[in-house]
Length: 231
Image 1: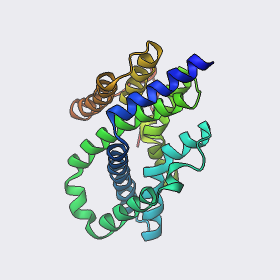
Image 2: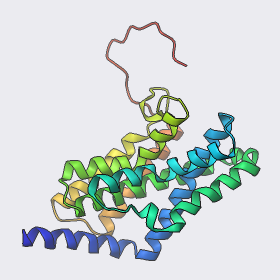
Image 3: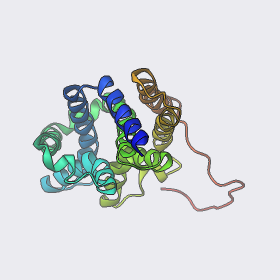
Image 4: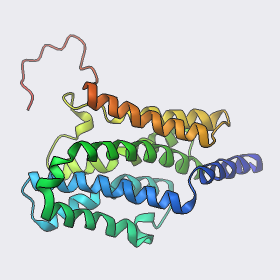
């Protein structure tokens, strides 16, 4: 048990070498801001009022991290102990509320930053879950949940089928799964370091960009014969 505890502390020290606390906090806020914009934009398209826009922005930005922290027992969650985590989605709400036509025009740039946040959060989420004692598979699953959980909650609240479940959407969860799995394998073989962590995050990021560029989609059921038209 003592050796295992040392191993966990060692891996967190590696993560801190890759991202100093201040850098990690800044990256977190950037990812939260971009995720919040995607939630706020959907709220505008759904004709929500300003309160609805704020709620959807907060849920999209913080939902995945809240779910992870509650599962692993990291309470109170970071979103409730750091005011910046709560205020950042509100800033995104104000921006979208007044400037949503302009934000819509830079949607490509928003998607690029969203992909970067996806790569970062799947790596950090997996490592944090493992540090709290979860196994490799469970840690990778929570890394995935950290990256995509907010988007799922966003779609559910907006009364839409979650994007990662729809065949007509470019791959989103798969890049996060790949990134989280790479981190889990690095933890398994004790090779998690700045290079391998960055490689996992960049791999998820690039896969998401390629999916958007080339419109990669997951296959549907084999020999599917349904005549029902999709929305």
